[in-house]
Image (cartoon, rainbow, N blue to C red; front, side, top):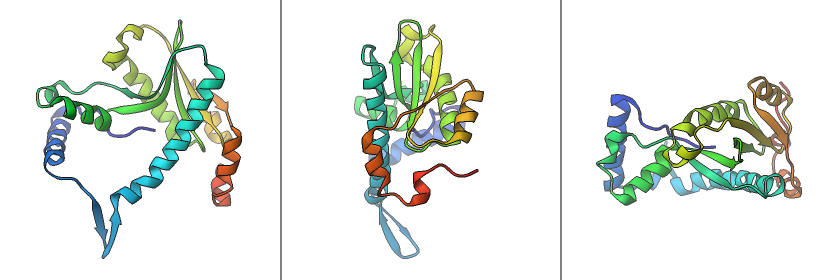
Length: 201
């Protein structure tokens, strides 16, 4: 889960500045495609609902397996580029931190290591690359300087088994955990049959 890279390089910085200027002057409310108007809020609602289910999955996973250790969910990683810092008000800094920094589903702060968690109802190969990216960004995140020396354990949590993705994850040093609370069964009933299982290949 997470989106939009930390700005790096001249082109990315200029793009980020341009985006910030547009943010200050207008708010996108709809998109018109071939005569049909799609509400941005409507398009985003389905994604938010999916993310909410996955955050419920990770929250219940933390409560079951790591109740005694401090943890955070929806953790912003990386840092705001210094070229942007002087341009931002406090409100805009929060907006930038929310929109332009990637976020991990959860981190557990163990005495001897950090557990970096990505959760998915149905896993995909992209979850593997996201975990690897978050592993790179975590030591660069100022909020976690005190944990910088700790090793990072990557964990992929999923509710629909996918042997191919699980095998790929293990090959990359990622621990995979099948976790399927009862409410997932009810949710799967509203999906198309092909969405209730992993791809066959």
